[in-house]
Amino acid sequence: MSRGGGRPPNDDQTTMLVRKIPDGSVIDHIAAGKALSVLRLLGNPQENGFTIALVMNVSSSKMKRKDIVKVEGMEVSQEQVQRLALIAPRASVNIVRAYRVVAKRNAVPPRTLRGILSCTAPTCVSVREKDSAPSIFFLSGRSPLKYRCKYCGRELTEKEISSQLG
Amino acid sequence: MSRDAWKGRDVISILDFSRPELESLFAAANEFVGPPRPRKDLADYIVATAFFEPSTRTRLSFTTAALRLGAKVIDLSPDVSSILKGESLHDTTMMLEGYSDLIVMRHPSEGAALLAAELSAVPVVNGGDGSQHHPTQAMLDLFTVKRLKGKIDGLTYTVLGDNRYARSATSFLYGLTKFRPKMVYVVSPETLRPRDEVTKQLKGLGLRFEQRSDLEQVIGSTDVLYLTRIQKERFPDPNEYEKVKGSYKLTKDVLARGKGGMIVLHPLPRSTELPYEVDSSKSAAYMTQAHLGVPLRMALLQKIIGGGRS
Image (cartoon, rainbow over all chains, first blue to last red; front, side, top):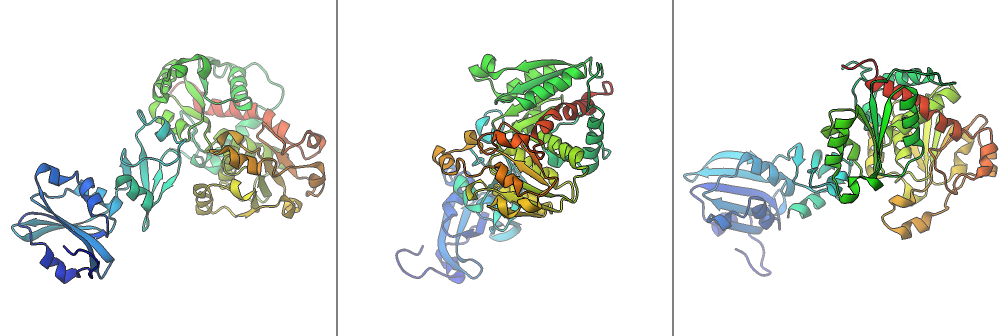
């Protein structure tokens, strides 16, 4: 992994930094700096014995800078991919078996989120009655990502969503 | 669902109702205007009022409307109920559902009526939720315009005051999206302008409106002036309230520059923005507006729970 003030590696050099995985998931096109948030969103698989490879701040033709996460032995589910879209809306997930990519999944933000985000309006009923009223948000924008609270109409920005989940 | 399907319906936001539904409500309300006569339309029904915030007109006009239709009314008083012991809105709603045929609810939290409606098998009527919606006030306001001006379309409206926190103002603006006003001026100090989600909604619904900061620029072309007080109780920071306190006022002098035939509406209660000297003006229509709350809410109750149990 590149360290210090040197130039970050480009796409081709990335493959030199982290070996290919025989089985598991490769999550690419994560916004630079979000790799650890992605791991948290996946439930910190390293704590369950999975081997993780992180490539951070690599240069990208599409995103200028990006992070990559490889999780050996764990296939990211479709539901997890949807959740990934909340903090890495441009992420793509390759499922690898026997060194071959067998499925590609793009992060698509769910239309409805239940109990995942918290409303930022202090007087919203989903905040004041949170024990009996789990939050419900509807997708209101894809780029930038926005979700609207069902109860008070307040919109959460991509930054707010990211900070809540990160 | 037909275009005029009121039976068993929740009333959460005026945006949930079509123009024909509102017009049929106004037509029904017209039948109840005038000297009351004994009625038994809702004799078998119990209406529950649950006001978690203070109220004079909404609570009493709903109660009066229910009583005039022969219904019985039970009232949940938060200061003498288990709410003081911390009972949740969830459990309170479940109790009211079991004890009544319709719940009228006011609550300081945005979305409270919607949550209650999701929980309750009996209809829930939103009597105001935080700074978000006050649908029956907006229905009443439009009904008043219809009665006093003969129409709602083609008029110029000025909504003056606390357009950020006053749910009456927000709901009135939402209500206007169902009609075709000539123009809507939204006049308020900078910090009391409508919230982003409200302006976005109004734009999305195609309402023709402009935001202004000076009433005098627009009063000469206004047919309906809708005024609200600054909602002191909803300011997160008391210092912000102090900055705008007394920042607008409708005086007789200002009123004199108004268009002939202009009416002034106010959901009340008032504060310094509407001095008592205005009461004697021909334009002052807010007491009529408040009184029309009874026939409007009679029509609403009859449409939702009247006509026999289904």
